[in-house]
Amino acid sequence: MRKFFKHSILFILTLLSLGILSCGAQKRGMMYLYSDQNNNRFQITASEIRYIPMTASESSSGQYNGGKKATVKITKETFNQISTLAEAVFASEGVTTQRRMLTAVLSLQNNGENRQVIATPSEERKRLEAVLRELIQ
Image (cartoon, rainbow, N blue to C red; front, side):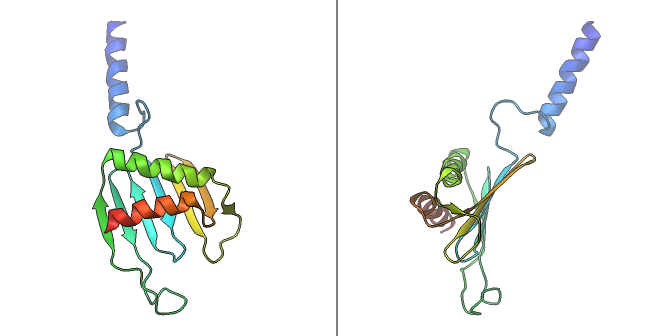
């Protein structure tokens, strides 16, 4: 019995270290993907934000440029703030079923859970975008 217990503990510790089994509300596997109304993209994980701007050659006008690519390290507290703002966008009534002008797309990928919303202009979306823009400056 003692040997079984020892192997069980080792097995659980191995699963924890590999991230297969989580302890508490761990957000390591979470990634938010946000595409603003100009199709500038943000990839947000617990440790960084990657900004992938729209280029002139990708834009419909052939002229719009979203700026320079950026990767910014963030703290867990900042990620939690972004997560709270993103969840407010998911819960907002400012959503639609079709991607049209002035809409943005917010997605969450979390260990097999995938959610997506097409967000119309709203206060929730404005707050999320303001934080993201400030962080990539």
